[in-house]
Image (tube, rainbow, N blue to C red; front, side, top):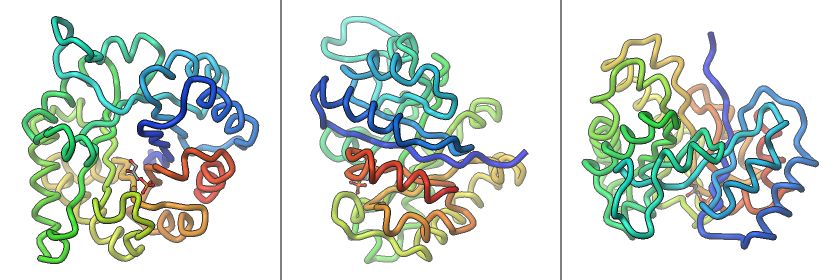
Length: 252
Ligand code: 13P
């Protein structure tokens, strides 16, 4: 068995309903057959229509960008993991730095969300990554270790096998400033060694670890070429079909 390569698009809060339909149509038209798993993480209102558009395409999957930690109840405005699963999604992003920063999501809450996702049969794409000040202080490895351990290391081996990790240095998100391939490789290797300590070398070797932060068609190949980088979580460039598909093609 070898680990899965993946390119996931995080649309964030972009595209109205019709624009979303158009974008998916363009992506489907351009995508070549590939072993790379391609995941479209759309706003909630798009999930149903995107599910219908991609249902016959074998390497294309659907994901949400957030979920609530409770199974159901009086949580006005929230969306449960079972609801997300019921429209045909297989993935959910959990712990994105924008949710940590703007919505106060902390490690304890994220651990609950990860468990809720897994209980509904969704695979978490768990995001971790340091702010610029942490990178400047040189303590990024400790911070990322804390994030990963707090949210994921209470899981059983079976549960952990469903998790995808995305390393997204906050200073590289939407800034045009990418981590260098060496910086990405160093952190991915560190994350993989944490997994090896907790779940064994074989599981570590099988875990998909994505890089996110200003990935573009022009830099994707070099970043994805690093031995511990298994693909990317793409923000801005996932909103343009040509760019997104070019990034997927850089994994071929
Ligand atoms: P950008 O690709 O726009 O930097 O965003 C990265 C990201 O946050 C993906 O989740």
